[in-house]
Every structure is written in structure tokens, then in C-alpha cells.
Length: 351
Image 1 (cartoon, helix red, strand yellow):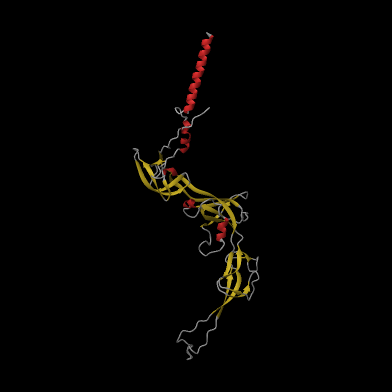
Image 2: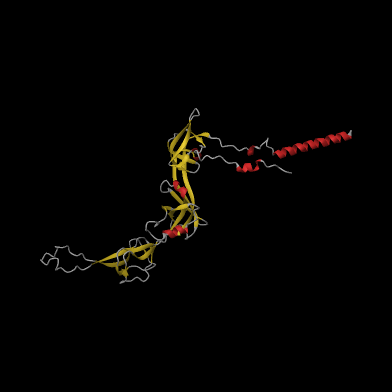
């Protein structure tokens, strides 16, 4: 009797082991775990709602000293007086140097004379008219570049006779090309935070673009400034934004930080998810879902976005339902190839 009991127990163990091995070799396909089931995200109607929205962009920033401003004598001539010396603080409009220039006289027109019968032929050549002009400081700051300029020295037309260091700083940041769409107008607000430095402060907007003097015959320092920021705004950064560092914010040339830029804001705006819109700048398309479930593709005018919601300026009303997420346009809605899943589809577990 014992032998039969032992034999039956051994048989049960063998059958169980065989069944388990068969299941493992198949990979358990019959009962896939819930978290392995991957399906397309189901589009659902969502309501158009009113709300507040703010578009804020945060960029890496770097502090630069304000470029020196050249003091240029438009007319050539001879220096008659130097009013200041290097290192002296001056206010905008203060005299820097005076230059005496001589304008060649104008020969009389044929037939013109002095009126006493001498006639034009007998009149002697006119003497050059001397004019003295004073070149003033274009901005307030510290004078430099005069060197040994003194009375009696010649000055060429358009020559820089001195420079003014403004002792001011600006923060600059590279703007990735695609983020230029987010600048609807001049920024509403800029805040500058220096790494390991003082608390953040407001920073007055100066400009956005390729930089001063680029491509327009302006100051020669702009190309160097652009090169100095190369690579700091990320790949594809083509433009830069600058703001004036407050005078009471202690900074040094080259320190880095973050520039937080509010490019736009709106209250009581009509909002929809960005995933419910084809397009993201000025114009787009949504699919409006009617009460009966019918769908209508509708063009809309767009405002600002915060990355999650987008303002609809025209084309929708509060209470409308839009499909979210909206299907991509034909040619862009490419299904996942599922390459990673295929790689393991036929893999067998070996023990």
C-alpha cells in the first residue's frame, strides 16, 4: 500500500513540473499583466473654460559689463581744448573736446560780383571759414581713451577722441529659435536671479534680437558679445535678450544666473489644453464635439500658452466641447513601430 501512495505522489509532482515548464516556455501569453497592455490614448471631449494664464520662460543668463560708448568727432580739424581727463566722471552732454575745423569757401557763381563793377573775374578767392565745435559726452560715465590728446593735435573726421565707460551691467540670455514664437510683444516682466548671489530683482528689458551693432554698421563690440554667449543657451539658440541689471544689485562681469521672463498674461481667457489644438501660434484647428456626438473641425485664433493650456482668442465659446487629444494631421500621425516589443516577442525563457 505504501508503494502505491509513493508512486502516486511522484506522478503528481512530475505532472505539475511539466505543466509549469510548458507555461514558462510559452511566456505566459494567455494572461498578460495589466501594466503590459499598451493602447492608444483615448480622445475625450473636454469643455472650453475661462481662466487666467501666464507664459513664463526661464533661461540661463550671464552678466556683461555695458560696452564703452565712443565719443566721436564728426568733423575733422585741430583740437583747441581738452575739457576733461581720463578717469573723470562726467554727465551726459558734458564737453569733452573742442575742435576747430576749416570749411573751404564757395567760389562765386559766374556773373556774380561784389556789385562795384569789379565782376567775378577780378574777385579774389574766398578765405576758408573756421568753425569751432565742441564734442560732448553721449552718456554719463567715466572718461577714458583720451591718452595724451592735447590742443593742437589733428583730428580726422569721424574719429573717436575718447570713450565713456558707463559702469553699468546687463544680463543677457540666448533664446532658442522656437521660443521666439512666445514673444508676442516686449516682455511684461523680467526677473534676474544670480547663482549664489543676492536675492532676485526686477531687470528692465533692453532688447531682443541679434545684439547691438550686428549687421548694421553699429558698434564693433556686438560680435564679440555674441561669441561670448555661444553655446550657453542650448543648441539652436539664435537670438538673445538683454535687460539692465539694477544699480543696487551687486554683480561682476561673467557671473551667471537665471532670467525669468513673463512674455504674456491674460485673465478671464478662454482656455483649452494644448493637446486639443493643431498649431500653437496665432492660428490653429480644434475638433468641436456637438451634443449628439457629431464632430466639426474649426479654425481658431490663438493667444498665449503656458505649455499646458492655450488661450483661444476667437472661434470658441465657453461651454463648447473640443476633442482632446486631437488627432495629428495626416502624414504626422505615425504609429509606434513597436520595435522594442517585437524584439522580445518570440523570446523564450530558458532554465
